[in-house]
Image (cartoon, rainbow, N blue to C red; front, side, top):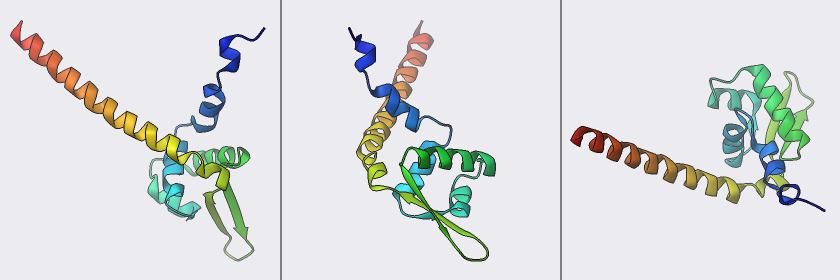
Length: 119
C-alpha cells in the first residue's frame, strides 16, 4: 500500500529547481536565448564551474537546450525547451508568493518591534 508521501510529486519537481543558481539561470533564459558569457555577466557571483554544472543539470532534465555552433571561437547558446517553458507559470506563482511573503514578514517584524517598544 502506498503512503501519501509516495504519491507526493513535489519532491521530483523541486529536484529539478533546487540549486543555488538554477532559478536565476531560468529567469534569464525565460527572457530569450543566451550565450554562456551573457549568463555569466547576468549572474556575476557565479563561477564558470558552477554555471557549467547547473546548466548541465538543467539540460539533463530537458529544461534547457544547448546548441553548439561549429565556429572559431566556439559559440554555445542556451534556451528554454518547450517542456522547460511549462515551468513559467509555476515560477511566476512562486515569485508572487515570495514577494508577498517578504512583505508579510516585514509587516510582522515591524509590528513586533512596535510591540516590544510599548512593553
